[in-house]
Structure formats: C-alpha cells, structure tokens
Image (tube, rainbow, N blue to C red):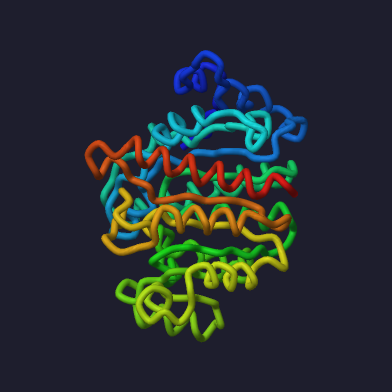
Length: 328
C-alpha cells in the first residue's frame, strides 16, 4: 500500500476540453506540485481516492468498491468552471495504490490489511487537516471512516463528531478491523465524540448492536421512522442530526449503499433518492465546523454499464459539498 500523487498528466487524461468552456480539470491543482509544502497550496479542499475493497471483504461482504475512483475523476474533472465552483479551490492530491497487496480471502489476513490501511489513512488525513484543509475522500469501503476520524481528531487534538447517512450503523464489535466497525473502534479509542446516524434500516442492524447503541446514548433516526411511520420528514431528520454534531468539528459520512438502486457493495432496492443524498450533503456541509466528507462503498464494477452514472453522482455530491461549504 502506498500513496500516489496526482499529476497534470493524469488530470489531462480525464479532462475533455471544449471551445468556449472551462472545465475544473483545466484549473484544478495537483498533488505533485504541493507534496513538499501542503500549507502553501491555496486550495481549501483536498481530494483523496481509496480504491479498495479489503474492508468490505473483511466484513464478509462483497468486493467492488475498488472501482469508483476513475469514474469519479472522469465526471468531476469535466464539471464546468464557474463563479460557484472553481478549480483553484480544490487540490486533487492523490490516491492509495494497492497493487502490491497480497490477494487473500482469509479473514484474519484481510483484517490485518485493514489495520495497516488504517495507519496510512489516518496519517494522510492528519497531514491534510493540520495544513488547514478539508479532506474529501472517495471510494473504498466504510472501514476508512476510522482512519479519517482518527486523523482529523489527532490533527485537532480532540475527538470530533460525525453524521452518517447509512442503512447500517457500522458499530459492530471490536473483533478486528473491517467495514462494519469503523465507528465503534473510533468511539472506543476516543477519536469520535458525538455520532449521529440517519436512515438506519431496521432489517439490517442486529439487536445486540442496537442495544449497545442505545446504552451508549448514540443518536439515530431509522429509515422506517422517516418513510414508513412518517414520524419525521427527511428534511427535518437531516436538521435534527446536524443539530447533534454541529457544536464541534464534524465529518459527513454518506455510505452510497443508502441510495436506492445505486451500484454499491450492499446495493438495496429501498433507500433514499439521489436528490435526498445531495440535500443531505449540502445541508451538512453548510457550516464552518465541517471538517471532512467521505463517500464510500460505490461499486460500479458490480453493475454493467453503470460507471458513468456512479461517477456523475459522486461528482454531484462533491460539488454540492464545495458549493455549500466554500461560503465560510
């Protein structure tokens, strides 16, 4: 596992120029130009790719989350430059390369690989946040929530808060690292303070886990309470979750599994709409206390001919985040 810096040649490969138009890829900053001194970079937002599926497989799930990074680049770099979003706001820093990782299906080995990845991710996120930047992390499993939370917490010298739109709490026991226990590990190790969950599916969170969540007074609003029982509207639920975390630095987690029929490692016929996911990101990003965005679990390789749509929605979500947050 190693971190590869993005350079202008990579950006050019994914950017399509057009007369009388200016694309983000023609102005975006690249990691190779700022690796020695990240603080000197004028960009506020730093994009990092983690194209891996070790974490989901270590959780006895499906792979596929390796495949979202390049589709995202092909769509994001071709967004129109405008007075609402411009390339010099954003540093396309780089991505983690897993070409040297030993292939395995053994759970113990997979979980050790996740542990090693945790160290690399937390170090990189700590570096970015210490430089005064806001990381945007694309791809990989939801296991990377732990490394991101840890890195941001270490950089700030205190525990941070997180809001997670997700069918799954990812608060499984501390049984070795995988995509299902990033938040429970972050909480247990003192990196995560307030954890608010939106849209949990009652069918896919164990009784044992929900009892621990209630015992620890962790906030959640279920999908069924929003869309079936109509105890609260989706917009009001977003507002309530934001109120739980906004008093301190907080991260935004959007598991792409939460979006109905979206190609992901745990794709579901029932979920929030793409527009509701965009609303969630925009509203949560509209705060001076926002400290990161994480978009895990997209897996276009699992659904034929889905790469363009996956890349485009990821690009929408990142641009929504930047537009909402850049006013601060």
